[in-house]
Each structure stands twice: as structure tokens, then as C-alpha cells.
Image (tube, rainbow, N blue to C red):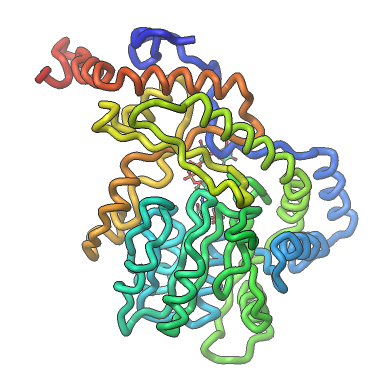
Length: 408
Ligand code: T4K
């Protein structure tokens, strides 16, 4: 265990981990079960195009969520585009900026304008008051994002959008298996989108799904995901190929089998992080409503640089030197990224503040209790001596032997 700043790899100590540990390592699955399914698909000689494993995957997801329809796709980004296209959105789409670039890029790719709204600082999700203020005659929809698996204030967003006659969709990429007021995520708005990317709590190598109780919408997105075959309206013409393959469905089903165990493991990891990082001034682990169900796939820590003397980015670099690959989810925020930054200025103080302070620490079934103990040892040491550490880092000798930043 590291006791002094000189023990940190940043200052020449040994790295805490011989090999990198990651946020987003694929969770463990029953390999024999996966290989059985893949072998079955090969024997069945049906590898994609609405195959039996993809249909089974859709049924399992729909049952889990309690919705009438699930359309599995090749990823979540394209699923978001299918929704926007199927509902013939125009003009502006309101969304948070504190999200993965995919949320914004998906609508931008269709020629729509993302309008970034500020967040409720307590949840990191869209602030419904800011949403109401951002609605213009060009607005056609609102995309909420259940950031880090913490659901949006869905009731408030449903009211704002219903009053304005707008579509409401949720990017639920992080939130399979989570609930809001006891109701499973996947049942809110007109439709929701899950991601089953390799880094997600349920993974299909690459994959996504649209879930909705709207049968007509489900029919449209299913057709659009298959080149638009079966759709006769000229405005909806021009589909794409967004189908989920049988190999992805085999992985998705096997990952769904493992989900309860993975979620339990994640919860234990989360609770250990909370315990080990408790009572450190200026550092908090984001919380979850205890009465709700969560998948705990992200352990997000917030660092206050004024209290700790340590900026989040230096902590990320310091952890990287220890072979701990933490992630800045999500920084920069979307409005700070091109092509949005140079097109329009957005005033999003809560977004910018949180985005500059958060980082995701490794969790998932690849991460053990001992790993967490060691990660927390580094974080505790760095944060509790943040001012000293920052000064020492700034005064380190540069290549010319001079300190990088002059003291004072
Ligand atoms: N909406 C939201 C809110 C999202 O977060 C996302 C995706 C989407 C929409 C779009 O969903 P998809 O279209 O992807 O289905 C990763 C994922 O690629 C991305 O899916 C995810 N969100 C995002 C939060 O995380 P990056 O840029 O961080 O990926 P990368 O390659 O840097 O990997 C992250 C970490 O995971 C690394 O430390 C390495 C590790 N990793 C990654 C892969 C792929 C592994 O250990 N094994 C692996 O196989 O985006």
C-alpha cells in the first residue's frame, strides 16, 4: 500500500497494478453457454435478418422491461437515429450536453440541431425547467439521458413535452435493469434506447434496442432497420441496415443470463468504494435512490478542486500511471465538442461544473475487492494531500532541468 506521495508512480514509485484495469471491461459470462448458442446458430444456418436468437433476445428484453415491443439493433447510436427518422423529427431536438457524444451525433447525422440544456446538479440529468425554457417553434422532440443509470425526472419531462406537443425519447444506454418510482426504465416517453456495447452491463459485442409500447412506431423502426422494406409512406422511405446479428444476440442472451449476478457484484463494488472513500473532504461518490433498482455499472466520483487542491484531470493522469484507466464520463461535454462548439454558444453552468469534476472508476465483474482496496488507497492518498501533490507536480523538473511551473 502507498503511504507517501513519493510512492506514487507519478513521482517514480512502482505502479500499483502490473496490468491495466479498466472501466468497461466486458463482464464475465458463461462461455460454454455462449459457444452452445453460437454453435446452434451455425447449425441453424441463419446468421442475421431477424433470426431466432435475435427474436429471443428481443422477447427477453421486452419481458424484463415490461413493454410491448423491443427492436434489437446493431448499436444504440443507430437506434437513436431510427427513432428520429421514424417519427419524422425536424428542426431542433433538446437534450443534455452531459452525455456521450453519440446522443448528439445521432440527431446531427440526420440534419437535426441538438439544443443542449442544462442539468439538475443533483442528478446530472436534464433539468425540466431548462427544457421548458428552451422550447422554440422549431423544437420537435426531447431526448432525455438516464446518466450513469440514474433515471431522469421522467414525470416532469413527460408533462413538459405533453404540454408542448413534443415527442419524448430516452437514451437509456446506461440504464437497463434500473427503475424510477418502481417502474423499469424502458417504459418511459414514446420510446427508449438501450446500448449493449461491449463495455455495457449487458453486452452483445455491439448492440442496441428500441423499446416501446407504441406498436406502430415499433413496426416503423423495425422496417427502417431493414432497409425500409414493408413501409409504404414516402416520407419514411429510405431505411438503413441496423439489424442485430445472431452472434450478437447469442452474446446478448448469455450476458442477460449473467445480469443478476453482475448487478450484485457491481453493487458490492459500489458499496465498497463508498465505504473506502467516505469522509474525505471534497470527494463524493454519486449516490443512488435506495428504494430503486440499479445496475451500478458506473462508479462515479466527484472531486471538488477548491477543497481538495487536486484537479480531476491530474487524478486521472495519476491513476493512469498506476495502471488504473479511469474515464472522464463525460468530459468534454457535448457543447464543448465540435461540431457544436463553433456553431452555437450554450450557457450550461451546472453541466460545465460537473463535467470538469467527475470520473468513472473501474468496476464490473473483472474488478475484485483487492483491486478496489488498492484503487481507493491511491485516491485517498492523492486527494487528502491534493494541494501538496499539485504543487509538487507543477514544480517537477522539465526536460531542461527547470521546474514546469514556477512556484507561487
Ligand atoms: N448514449 C450514451 C449515453 C452512451 O453512453 C453511449 C455509449 C451511446 C449512447 C451509444 O451506444 P453505442 O452506439 O456504443 O451502442 C465507450 C463505449 O464505446 C460507448 O458505447 C459508451 N457509450 C461509452 C460510455 O463508453 P469510449 O470512447 O469510452 O470507449 P473506449 O474504447 O475508450 O473504451 C472504454 C474503456 O473500456 C477502455 O478503458 C477500454 C475498455 N474496453 C473497451 C472495449 C471496447 C475493454 O476493456 N474491452 C472492450 O472490448 O466509449
